[in-house]
Image (cartoon, rainbow, N blue to C red; front, side):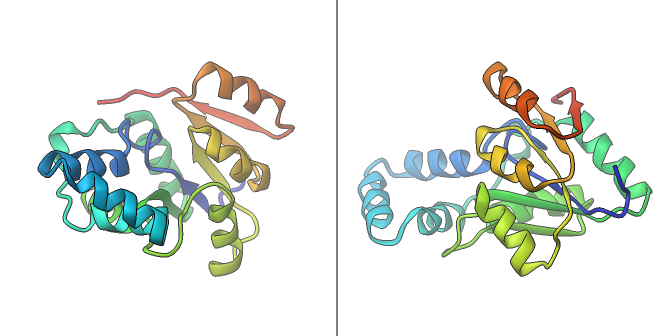
Length: 184
């Protein structure tokens, strides 16, 4: 693994156990159950990224409910100590994930879903290549949506995966690094 290659890290299920987007959605609905109708209309008219914006814009993260993956944070810290650039890239809305990154203060940049761009799966790769101009990178993830990202990454770095995804990861012909999840 080259220390010169930037490291991109997923948030939900990787750095933290929870999914910030799902927490924001649940909180939004719990504040007003009938907002489900508005969310469905918004989804049909403007798409998923717009819904993520709508539910995240006033969401205040309760850090007492968040469980950080200490072993993943340790991996990131080791990368940072070797002067490696480390970026958070998440399918959750950028408004919510910036609150996490402000608390952690370990990332060189943060990229998430915007009102018009859903930062998931191949969209992450497109963003890294086209917007950041980075062709070689490593990626830490934990979900089936991360499989296309690993196809383009130099190394497959994973944590907190289920057995089915672990089997699929084993089929990828690349160097693999497993980070045993320790959520605190």
